[in-house]
Image (cartoon, rainbow, N blue to C red; front, side, top):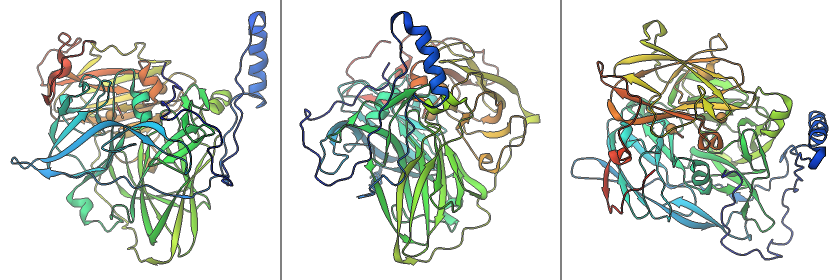
Length: 544
Ligand code: C2O
Ligand code: CU
Ligand code: CU
């Protein structure tokens, strides 16, 4: 299990490395529930009772008022690109090792990044463009790069079958053909996703389209359109990333937050309205973002695109992998703290506490300048949202999530769990039949939510989604359309995006085929992983 595995420190530990006078947040003691020898059962019963009473168990984390906000929020650079002779927009991405000093004056941590020491640049492309991603692996281990939320051929998807060996370059190419949205990229190496993302391989992939370009909404990257990539981490006394401070049913949890890799971040706001592109890039933790004074966050977009109309929310909950675009309105000279309140995970008290369900964080301080550039009022309408019609569905499927399995089976790289057909609409019923938190993510398509527990979903679930939180025993019905990219040999994934669960096998795979093709149940041979993109600098094929 990779849970809690530390990122290798770049420097040996030495004492007295913290700058004097810096107030770090109070360290919290994690009390592990344990018993020994013949006393195990009694010990566990006692521990359970005590945990239920809230006496022992993972300590609640509450960083409100304890975060210094003394580092300027890093804004990931926009990735450079050029057009090749075929008119394709070409990006060069190199996954490499780096060293990152998260705490001012503290020690460096050995990290991974894309074209930089930690995280990666923001990719940006317009609907209708063809893109070519040249992804080079400069690491000493095999990795992959997945375009989360992207509609694209399976061979370009960067799932666990499209491995990139050290020294190799993988060059997927596809046409951007979906609405403007905040997508992201990260490795998807089977069994190692948590580790590779945790070390720092992740970035945003912003899509634009003609409709979004015409809307009068904050859109100046790094000025009033701000990436907010949130990850929980734990640090040792020297300021290096260390083992998770707690580990519960959702996976490993950190007790401090990084935003775009910045610990204790503030953002100087110069405009009346600011758009935050929130990405939960954490392994296990779910957030419920809110302003510290309870002012509305205007939700304008979800995973796969803009909403029909802005929705005023006091809190925006995001489980791992989900995104939301919110607009915050500021007054001159004020400071507003983006906070994460205890998320409503819908699980029983003990699991809740051990899954971070009772934790509160100060996330990011927004500091408004003494005078702010005026911003246009938010449009009352954003983009049209054509509704997929469940009465036209060609196929209904059910997915039950329990332990590390979906429909009673763990992930098998050679098994194809189902076959979808081009030009068909499918309704999926998703159920978490387990007491622990899970969510559900599907590749290739964006879906619409039909019902949550049999009822019309709330307004914040009215837009395109590719990842959705599943509270226990709340059946959620979603609808999606498979429109193209038939390939009987390369599968897409669906899985829980709590990365420990995914790594442990809470994942399945499907193929999309032309109508009239036989269903596929198995992948042909072991050589299928090379099916996508060009492999230059080929250095031999890894066997699964
Ligand atoms: Cu963000 Cu299959 O992953
Ligand atoms: Cu994905
Ligand atoms: Cu899960």
